[in-house]
Amino acid sequence: MSKMTQIIDKSEENILHTYNRFQIVLDHGDGVNLYDADGKEYLDFFSGIGVFALGHNMPEYTEALKEQIDKIMHISNLFYNEPTANAAEKLIKVSGMNKVFFTNSGAEAVEGALKAAIKYAYNKDGKHDHEIIAMDHSFHGRTCGALAVTGKLAYREAFEPLISKVNFAKMNNLQSVLDLINDKTCAIIMETVQGEGGIYPADKEFIEGIYKLCQEKDILLILDEIQCGLGRTGYTYAWQQYDVKPDIMTTAKALGNGVPVGAFLMNEKVAANSLVAGDHGTTYGGNPFAGAAVNKVLELFETKDIVGHVRELTPYLEEKLDALVGKYDCIKERRGQGFMQGLELTIKPGDVVNKGIEKGIFTITAGTNVLRLLPPLVIEKKDIDKMYDILDSVFAELA
Ligand SMILES: *Cc1c(COP(=O)(O)O)cnc(C)c1O
Image (cartoon, rainbow, N blue to C red; front, side, top):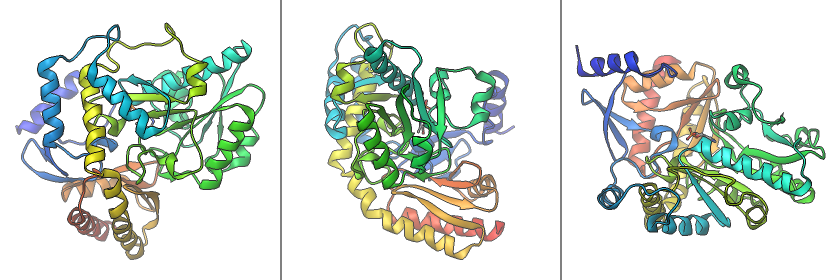
């Protein structure tokens, strides 16, 4: 029996089967490449679902983590620590928000965001019947609050009722949002670019329209930037390209570059009128180890001008993907921004992913008919060329 088969069998014997996993054991990574336990190399065009923004094994990053491990990893939130103080200062600066709360995951950041919004509304009128508007095709995580605002019924159905009333509008259809607004509406939550749902960027008119509406009615705008945030679209946060500003924002995935960490951030208005001491907490959130990771990630984003790099290479990536769209009838269109791209297919995207893995590339699906590309933000032209060559041969075989 191969080593991979042994590890897979052991995993399936003991780990609850909530994922249909690829029959691959990944062992280590280097830059934009991943290696399985049998030594096969793969070009990484999914970054562990948009997490490894800086690629694998970046020396400056891993050194910073090792240093922190030797000092202290955890102290609880009953004390202060320097790495997290520095990380918070940097995150406030690049986001333009006012206050941050560190979490351990994306879903937990969404939970906190929802709690802040509900508390804000409760402080205003003392009522318990507030409603939230979310979007069809959205994805906000698997915990009960995050699930309640996730627009895929199959994920929610068995677990309902979840949190208080959530109504689903259509992304990029302002009228569908207007139709749902009433006196009880306390927040609108949406991804600036929908990821899991199939790579749907918000139209400028739509997101700016929602922002205006929220301003007028004192409804809180929660932008979920967990997947599209931190450089992936060519902006540190995707909303920064529009004339909008969220009241509350969530971030995770790329934030720790592999260390499990997320955050929700708020503007001054929400910070002054929502969660106070005793309202929210976490044992691990913002511990020195996670703080050191975030601090280093934000430092490297600046010194390596990661956002500038994404912007510079986006036209080349889009040109190559558009060439595939032009060449194969089974690719209907390309959608996306920066290094967050989707190809809508008339064939099964899962088949493309599987064939790609055979030929040495990792991609990922989104929605029901989209092939999603989330490469590390440090890819170079040669990696894009290699991606093109592999996918070209994949589509040639499947078309
Ligand atoms: C991944 C994701 C989440 C959930 O994050 P977890 O860390 O898996 O809990 C929430 N929102 C969006 C937009 C995501 O892409």
